[in-house]
Length: 299
Length: 270
Image 1 (cartoon, rainbow over the protein chains, first blue to last red):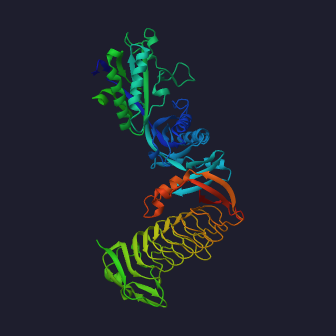
Image 2: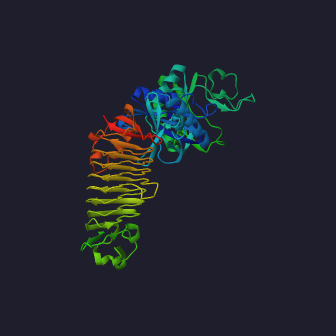
Image 3: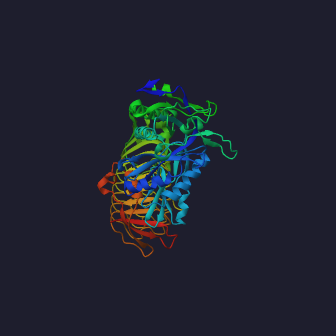
């Protein structure tokens, strides 16, 4: 398949079941809501070493938030429910509770309930109070700038992590420009996040390493400087840079949509902007139950 | 299907226990069976059709017409459905209700909504003492749900209130929120003496400055984040509490009752 001169490989991205949740952070203004959200979703690019994958889903207008203030929806994904709950709680406690004027609310009403402010309340040292409003429990924790308001729980649901595609380009600036265009469009899709810095990862990995202590290492088949060094290279001579976009989402369909608009945005730049191929990372289909076939998505 | 309607024929001298006439107990009964239900009236037991003219079939939607202040226990332990009352009601209306809606187009007597667990009790007139309270000797009053009174309420509103919300558009008598364990009472009118007497936790939300006892300490003026959420939850009500112009988030906070654990609060609109 070729779109606007860009070859779409007959391959697929391989993704895994994860557990996901959403939280809504509000603050006095959008600036401080974003600061709290960035802190909470920091150091959460990959479950390989961060314990979770997290990102900002979108900015919310005041009429979309429970308390009528500007807000941000963030999503967190982890391999298991316990790990997710722990990450959510520690991040909420260290990054949102501490952030001036912030409040924290559930972003998913259904699913298994996991603690959001339920245990953070103990920071109140006995002065905390709760309010049950319309069936939801909120904790009011006295803090130095007033009161930190946090909903007791949020919902944990089954999710999908690790959807991806690779952008192969004739130069590094062209690869980055294409990925930026893709991320711009993918941010408009609900229920997904792209957890890497700016949504783009330049150090895609393969499973395993020659070093026993490492369980992931550089994806040498797509490293342009190794074209002549590794027999596994998957790059043609004109490719000088490869970047990857990884997507976590609540459902396979959400990731499908995000990949479609992302790949389309890259293809819109086309071969005249140095984009040669779109490929994807997989493990032969043996590890992950979710397969995203690029040509089917773009058909 | 038309609402199952009970129209009172004559006003008996003695008080009537209306507790059998609730939606979940009448759902699968034939009209003849409903007519044959015996209601306590003083020391007598009267058939329903001796007291009421019965019409309609839909037991999930009960109407009581020509009601007056001696019909007690209307909607007691209601477990779903709607009861619509035209006229005053006696004591214990909505006592222990589990879910559903009771609309009273008149005044309510003592202990309305006492120990209710969930649902909505709406009173367009005035309510008597111990609204949403606990029965004598019991330690817990209302445990959930919402009571809306468009008129005034008597003394001891929310006595031993455990959870839930009581909204009063008018004024209340003495000892409002006495012995409160938790929950919320909002009063647009004036409050009487001994407000929040012996309250442990919970919130008394006031539109007008109260006369406070020495057991409440001033914590200063604050903008509280939970208030917009609380007011938003009232937006569907047929009440001035739903009017966005009556909402506020800036309050003077008083903590008390300090002779108890002092975790309760009185919030007064600024």
